[in-house]
Structure formats: structure tokens, C-alpha cells
Length: 505
Image 1 (tube, rainbow, N blue to C red):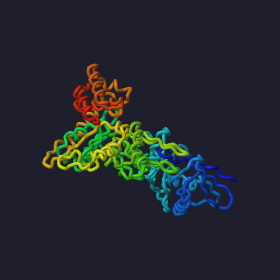
Image 2: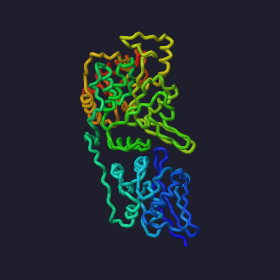
Image 3: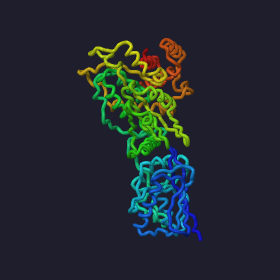
Image 4: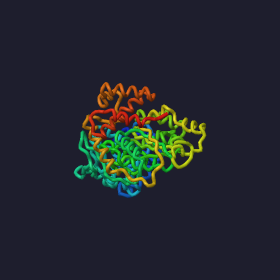
């Protein structure tokens, strides 16, 4: 007589979207055999040997029956070793009446029965929590506190297969894992926003360059895309590397988003309010920057930079196709990768920072060295960046040579305090997004101008040939400057400063 089919839940990952997987196991008479069906990859097929070893070395019997394990839905590919634990539980508890309902199990098994995590576990559960209400999960104990930081889920942790079996046999042994205290400074506004005052690289080391430092402060406060142009050694890289540490604080959900990207990128998952910083080399492949893959969509650097900084140094040396493809994610804050069997949407809400020399030899803006470039070379160099791409940039900064005898004008701590204050002003105004992300339909509400200023701005736009997109960017930058000045309304001086950062022909 056939034994009752047992079922347990886990989840798979398709790009960045998790989907529920129902694992079924049947035990029938016949020659002993163990098979797994349901479009599993090599890691899942190899799990049979890990499961056998883990059960037998922990004094559990392996049924001398035909065991068939099915991963449903059977028409979706499943990858990875996180299915080891749930499959082993179905086999180890085959003789007992166990209620597996409403608990999702995850974990890779060692040969000795040790339950381990994998790089994709956190991202899988975080994505699953967006679609499953009242989610309860059983995970390896070493990541249980981190997983418990995800809002609205119940987490249990186990170290070994024996503990996992005891968890289902003896309900009294269950102990909910409490969420990990982030332990950071925070602003308590419409919700908590976390930050750390840790400046591994400090703006006090930058000598002079007051305009560049001012623009960096504006960029950080409003998350405005910025392009530095200057001779080698003028401080472009120095300023960019320090920008990361003065960016606005993060909500818990944003911290989890960053951790999810790390998980999908096989990096160590840690919950920190320090925003990501990605700087792909100009020789990087397009797929590594944007993501891709023939079998399944892979996350790229622009998605890894979500909520942080994407830095393109030596900007004109990136391929034309790469720069033009960057326009959509810069504008829409998302990227859609389509494949024959799937479509995956990644978030690309990053602060773009570009750095470039003003000419091929680098000396066009130098006060010390003579530019050796011809007019044709200069024009060809400029043509590498199209106007539609440059129209996505908010701030254009020309940097002169650094003064070796110059003095430090500010510190990262001082700049960060200004960013925090402006961030509070934005939230108290009822704004849900950074100034650079204000929708066109909301400009009238958050960037309201008097009729006199409206006429002044329109005249300036016509004089300088600025597009309608450029008009919106001028208004958004002016709003940020007003916030830094602790002003409720935008004034003429704010608009003039915002206009001074626009691209000059």
C-alpha cells in the first residue's frame, strides 16, 4: 500500500523575484530508488547524496522504498542547495504524522547533518515576504537574527538536521528568534532612518575646491547626479570617494534592499546604513554593468548600486552603447531585463557620479600645463557624450588645479550635519522622496515659485537654451539649495546658484 504523500514548502528565486515551491515526497514499494523531479539544477540533483549522508550519520533510517520528490511548480527552474533541509525533513519524518503547513524551510546540509546558509537565502526570503502574509520560516541559526530583521515574518533557527526534526516532532521546543537590533543612530520622523557617523575618508583632506565641495554637498543632500571635469590630480576621485559617507540616512526597508542585492551578488550580508559604492572600470562588459545572462538574468553593477553611488571614472572612455543604455535606468530608477522565459525588473535608484578630464591630454583647464589637443581632438572627445545623456545630469562642475598651499574648508562631519538637517526638512514638508526624485506633477507643490521668479526662470531657460527636463532639474536643485539654507521658499539666489551648475556649451 502506498504511503501518504507528504508536503512541505520552500521557495526558489527567479532573478530578484521569489516564488513559492511545494515539495512533495511519495514513498512506494519497489526497488529502492531516490529521485528528484521538477526542473532542479545540478546542485539539487547532487543533494541526494548530502541528504542520505546527513540522515544515516545521525542515526535516522533511509526508507528502503521508491522515494520520489517533486518540486512544484514543475515548469519553473529551481537552483541552489536551499532545498536540502526540507527534502531531508520529508524523508526523515516519513513515518510520523507531522503538520508541515505554513512553515517554509531553507538550508543546505553538510554530510554530518550541519545546516548551513547560502548566499541567496536572505534575498529569497526578503522577496518572498513581499508576497506572503504572516510568513513563518525555518532557517540556519547563524543567519536567523539577520532574517528576523525582515518586517512581518516569524523566524526559527536550527543548527543541525536533528534539531530541525525535533522542531517538528516537539512543538514545545520551538523558540522564536527575535529581530536583530540594528544598533545605529537614527532620526525618528515618519519612520526611523538609520545612520552612522563614521568617516573612513574625510573631506578635511581636500584642499581648496570650495565650488566642488559645495556641489558635492548639494548632490548628497538631494541625490542629484553630478559630473566633475578637471585636470588629473585636481581632486575628482578624492571628492567622489568621500561622498559616500555624507549621504542621507536609510530606512529599515532600504537597508534590507541593499542587503538583498549583496545576497544576490554572493557577498556577505550585513545590515548597515552605509550606502553602496560601485565604480565599474570603463573596460567592463556591458553585461557586468547592466546585468544579464543567457539562462537567467543576473544582477549588474547598476543594480548593486541601488540606494547608493554609481561612479563612472574616465567617463568618455566608456562605450557609447553603455552610456546610452544608462539613460533609462538613470531616468526611471529601474531596469527591465527580458529573456525568452522571463522578465526581471531591477531597482536602479542610484546617485550617478561621473568624472572626466576636460580634454584628451587633460590640461585644458590647467593653470600649470599647456593643452596639446587640436580642435578636432577636442570636438571628438566631447562628442563621446551625447546631449540626451548629459541632460540626465543635474550638476556640472569644472575643477581647476589644486592649490598645494590651500587649506581645508570643511569636514565630513560638518557636511553630514547639514545633510541630516536638510533631510529632516524634506520629511517635515511631507516629501517621501529626495528632491531630485520629485515627480513633475509635484513640482508645483514642493518647488512653488512666485510669478516674478517664474518669469525670471523662464527668461534664463530661453537665454541658455535649457530643455523642459533641464527646467525641472534646475527647480529641484534650487529646492535642495533652499533646504540647505533652511528656507521654506525658493528665492532668486537659489535659482541663480542652480543655474550656475548647468552645462555650458
